[in-house]
Image 1 (spheres, rainbow, N blue to C red):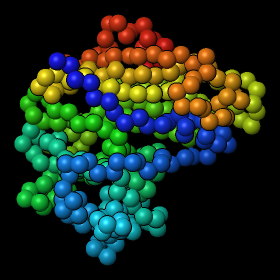
Image 2: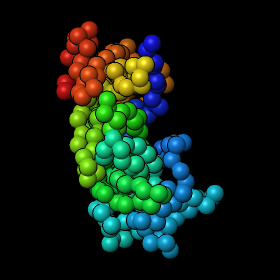
Image 3: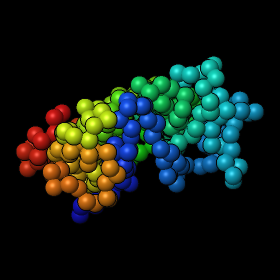
Image 4: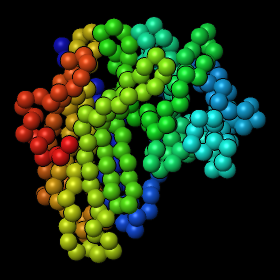
Length: 283
């Protein structure tokens, strides 16, 4: 039996078309699902308390820890008056070893634009007590799905991106972790769209691509066997590029492709039937 698991769609297209073309650098919008359901609130509380002084912890309306008034140690802006650190997502799993209990919390606003404005703290948990292993600057885990290797160690497949100076990049990547919590990332697929050449003019056209959707295929055992990415590629007039698109309605010049990648338990490879489609997207 093949199980298809849809991932939440991230509307990068809206960001792409609505971003100003003057070269302003745009921060991402807050996620809609900050905490994975399997994460214990007490563990999040303990982890935030490990990186923020008690008096600096910010709380949401229900009293749960949601951030810190100052940038924590390890972040790029620690010790600088750069505003609040925002908790974006928490994930549990066996990331550093098959038997380790790890908690990862993704945060925002304490790192530079080149580091995607944030990163992820990786903790080892023992009896509800967190021990900080590593701060992985620039690793954004707010839009990730968790899977396991055959030996029980787990990894993430994430959707990410970067925008600035009229350039909008989207990608799907695999993130794995060593015993110390340090991440290593492997890009599976990426797209790029640049509207900088349009400037203030509505004449001319631009080439570009974008990721629309991702679906995961799993074995009966629950192990990942592949992913299918729906992406668009083509050209738009500068006038079209500056108008918010109607969801689900692409201009005729933008073609839609489905590209399947197979996972052998260690790495991804493009499915033979998808090689022609992949060539439409420079990698």
